[in-house]
Image 1 (cartoon, rainbow, N blue to C red):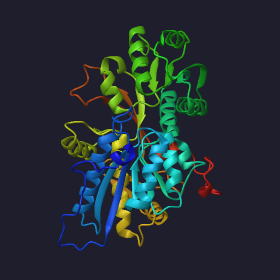
Image 2 (cartoon, rainbow, N blue to C red):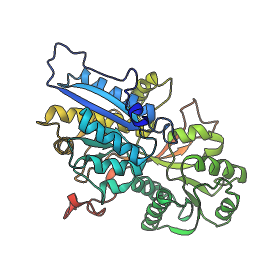
Image 3 (cartoon, helix red, strand yellow):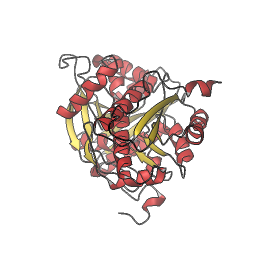
Length: 404
């Protein structure tokens, strides 16, 4: 049976304490639920599993009082498979916390499984803002970034730089439309104007007519509410048309480090994008990236993989300070304690479960500027978390009624 097969623990990732001299008070079981072979595998996948291993390693080096075991499964980007795995983990396997969960539809489904259960959910690779809005749960913490923050950071900084006229190229499905709507609102709030948009089906591969519309629109910024395989084709065809050069700026609303590396600097140079993490920000992020790369055949961490590390590390720290490993109690303790880790630095977690890490706008380097395989971005601006996340109380989260 396939579900049973994917429940198998990945070889080498069962982790137990080596500190025999420090008596342990029990076992914490971590489930990394991810996409191992599908379209989101490069963002999270085995990289997130390795990030979780690093978090456990750091926790044990600090003398943590629990033994920790990590299991993993491939949800195959199917909510029904993911919920079956999550239920089995919680009821039969004693999993205390589920981590990662790329694919927002899957994350929302698992969010309902963990709601009111014995387990916590650390949604470090999902971006649907409903997880801290109408679907918020006392068992869930949302780490890294979300669709609102990605769109708002990009729009706020790009409009502030003087590029006020926007045109959107959008995949016609919930994720793309959500990115476009969030960015459109942010553009207007920052004093900009949306002068046009085109939406195309999910299976579109020829973007010539849409790119020509954007190029001829007079827009100063072209917002790309596109992801995955479509993003690759959009950017390669945009490069052929010369779109994004000169006065027009391409702005990726859902672009990640592995996308830029896969597509190449020639087609992506000059594009701007938002991210909560980049390996070359400071000494701590560089040190973390080197440790991660040593486990992943030289691959550097994405923001989602860094989020898996940071969220699990904070959970384990909270476990040492908590009287119970119950899901809601653990999330309450995580919110009570300030966060601090080498990937994101110091932060706090709001009532709705949103971790308030700063966001950054980056510009993709040209081939001539890059000094190595992963030297892909240059920093444009750091944006404080308070300026870019969905304001507390405006997402419809029942836990924030009356909050300001």
